[in-house]
Amino acid sequence: MFRAIMFFWATLLLVVGLVQGASAQAQQAPASQRGPAEVVSDVTADVMQVVAEANSYFDDDPDRYYREIDRALAELVDWRGFATAVMGDYYSRGRSMDKAERANLKRQRDDFAITLREGLIQSYAKGLLAFGGAKMEVSGVEASPQSARIASVMQQVYGEAERVYTIRYQMGQYKDGSWRLRNLIIETINLGEIYRNQFSALANESEGDLDQVIGRWNETISEQAEELTRD
Image 1 (cartoon, rainbow, N blue to C red):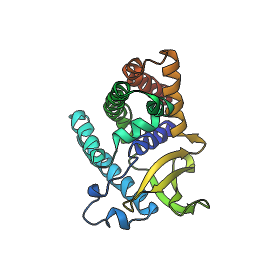
Image 2 (cartoon, one colour):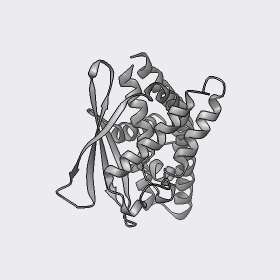
Image 3 (tube, rainbow, N blue to C red):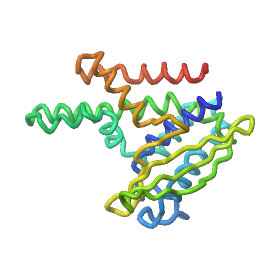
Image 4 (tube, rainbow, N blue to C red):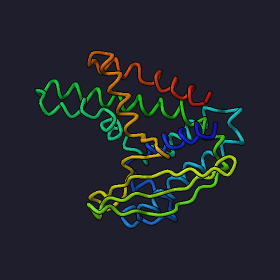
């Protein structure tokens, strides 16, 4: 069960992908002044504060919790950017399309962004309630040998029976100086690959009909969440 909750947590953090400086709390440094480890710590604290407070009202008002999670993520997430990354090659092919086809592809990307936002919050936010008491700490930062603008942040999460899980946050520094999440790896699970592969598989089943993929996406995510909870 704890492993499933870890997946819930990591998935929500994956969609907290492109962190916007405007969302930082008053006591936090401006986004352009925060390093990658600070960004990871701040995002963790923001989301888990919502989770901790929800234990007092969730049973009576679950919709309030989902609204609060949505509010916490609204200023943090570039939902269109996340949708573009998950679509992968299916969005990149727009470069070879004519104007009308590109416009339709962008409409599909925007629809998918809305679908992702609604589905991820509904499917995974509840799982985080059981995760509120877990101890987490940033254990180190690894700079990339290829670029000073790429780094990985390691976070240790202490679970059941003294089991320690490692989450690797793959971060990139953008033009405004802020560090933003590009991908998450929890133990050996690469979440970016999982979601891209899932989109590609659904697209193949749908013979490239992306509207059909988008229509099926949240049902697939819900089934995945149920399977993890049963494990």
